[in-house]
Amino acid sequence: MVNPYTSIKSNWEKIDYAGYREKGYYRGSGPIESGNKTVRQKRCKQAGMRWDEHNAQKLLTLRAKVENGLWLTQVRQAPARLITPEKKLHPR
Image: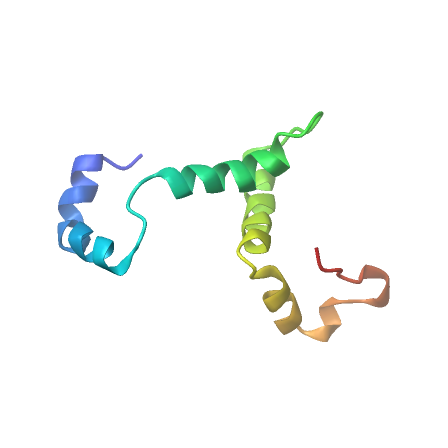
C-alpha cells in the first residue's frame, strides 16, 4: 500500500486544484464512488456470484470499457481472425 504522505509529496507539482476547477474537472470522490457502484457492484454482486481477485479484475476491466464506450471501438479494431462465425460479438 502506498503511503499517502509520500504519494502527495512526490506528486505535489501535479496537484493544481485551482487549475482543475477552471477547466471543470472533477476533484471529489463522487464520480469515482458512482463508477464503483455502476461498474463493480452491478456486475460482481449479483446473486450467487463468486469471484477470485484475478478473474474479477479481468471482468471489471471489460465492464469499464463497456461503460466508457471503448468496448465496440476496440473490438472493431481487433484482427478479423479473432472473431469466428460461432463467436460473433454483439453490441450491448
